[in-house]
Length: 326
Image 1: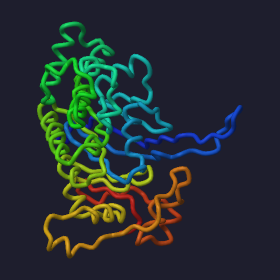
Image 2 (image 1 turned 180 degrees about the vertical axis):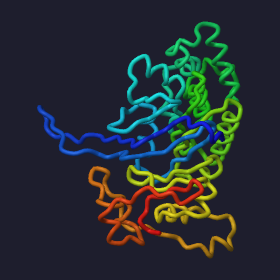
Image 3 (image 1 turned 90 degrees about the vertical axis):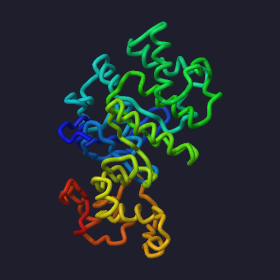
Image 4 (image 1 turned 45 degrees about the vertical axis):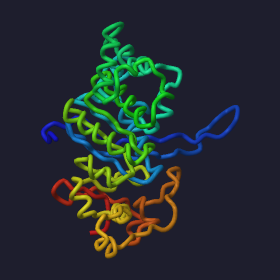
């Protein structure tokens, strides 16, 4: 990890989806605050993990950073350029340097296209290669993700889930990007295949100097692959730290509850651990609670937690937390 150069800066990022009513004339009656004021940096060649429950806004954060969703507010600065102000060809030129690996290897590949066309599409879109040169580049990418280059004329249905995800990785690498958003790239795969894909991503990072935003809910895998981890709850980041610091000294009650659910391979340690069972359901992002978003489920919440939003505090050593609790 290179601490000297910040590749991606996210400042106050918000993405609200409007709630409308009416048939002929639709009017906005509210908004789903999927991402609601997210701030963090990603250093060059590091892997930042983004974890949290389903529906907390992880995927929307990744897509909004890449401008697949245009943000409601905030800024995304990639290598000095503010992506939120770019349009047309300028944004297309930046997108060549940023890619995404999608969660579902079955839905993310066009079943009517051959592997040559699927992987070659970014090369055509960005005018990077054509003809024989494009075929050779696709075969090179297949070798890079450890697939047989002779598979070039096959269709997605002829591959297993793990092979399809490797094809998705090859497609993401086609435009020679610097930054890749990995949106739960292993959650749809068998456990036996997950480690292979994660090891591939690590090898590619070392080989090509890639920077990852790794979105996941498997906390054990996040600790294995990530350098730092950001914990998200109901559209906001509640804690951010180096992985070992976060796992050994979690400060936010939500992080403590998440980590208490991760099994430990030592039976003696496992018996002595205290599970933190959260009561109630996650509030609706259309109507989040006042004050701290986690206050309705927090086992140590006080009066101030339901009245005032906690400020982002530096706990030292690059460990940040948003919590009223000392």
